[in-house]
Image (cartoon, rainbow, N blue to C red; front, side, top):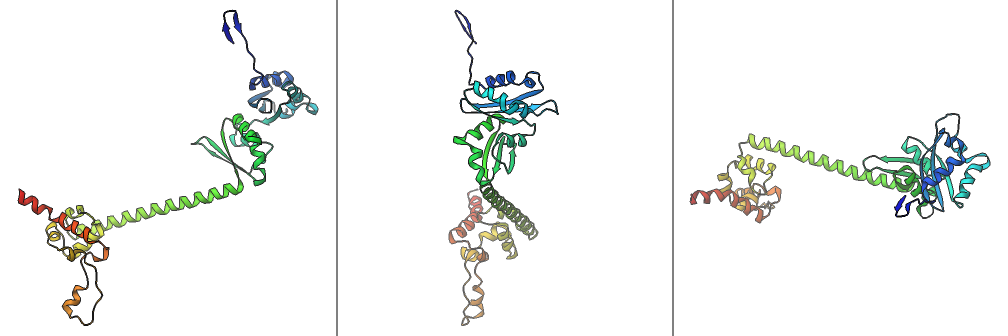
Amino acid sequence: VRRENRGPQIFLSRAHPEFMKKLFTQEVPEIYDGIIEIKAAARDPGSRAKIGVISHDGSIDPVGACVGMKGSRVQAVVQEMQGEKIDIIPWSPDTATFVVNALQPANVSRVVIDEEEDRIEVVVPDDQLSLAIGRRGQNVRLASQLTAKAIDILTETDASEKRQAEFVQNSEMFQNELDVDETQRREATAREERRALGVEDALAEMPHLSEAMLVTLGKAGIRTLDDLADLATDELIAKKRQSDRRRGRSEQAEDKGGILAEYGLNDEQGNEIIMAARAHWFEDEEG
């Protein structure tokens, strides 16, 4: 209704879904009497439409009543709508069932509802994909409008590949979580052992040193900042050397390398550790 100077003007639309619903109300007495109800309607005007119907009388088939004897009732509506094809769908309060019905004439293998995303994934046989989607996506678009749900169509092959990819991804995530838990457990165990050895917490603040390294230092008698600061870089990180049978006992003892040789720290990291441990010396001198 548009209000103009000459009075209210009424404009009617033949393309609106309500127009089709009123035509069915006129042609189907059961709809007019309230025995059958049109719960939803969707249209691609001039081409195709879908309506969802339900019967409030268990003895009356809502689809059959709307079609009429030899299709007489639905054909009357089709003629009024200039040949627009109409799919009459049984409405269901169950979302999955209604979606399956709405995608007729395609066959559906299964439906997966994503409540969080408010989307529905529909899996169809590979040879039913084009039928489910329809020409230029018409069938799935009308089904989506009819059910008021976003619908994604997948073939059984695509769905299988997707599930496999999700399984691999979830397995990797689960394994990563296990690895993190195991790493945290080892760190906690090493921390307890380090404290039992009497290694100061101040050493845990030194760069590049893990709890496992601090345990190794503690076992070597390095338990305070001063103990660590007294070390030369080589004493801390020097790599192990191959033993030489011609060397004496004192020379063979040097082959063990630095205290933390097994952890693969480089010279730069070793220097940073030693300098950080000695930092408090310079602070004391300045004080």
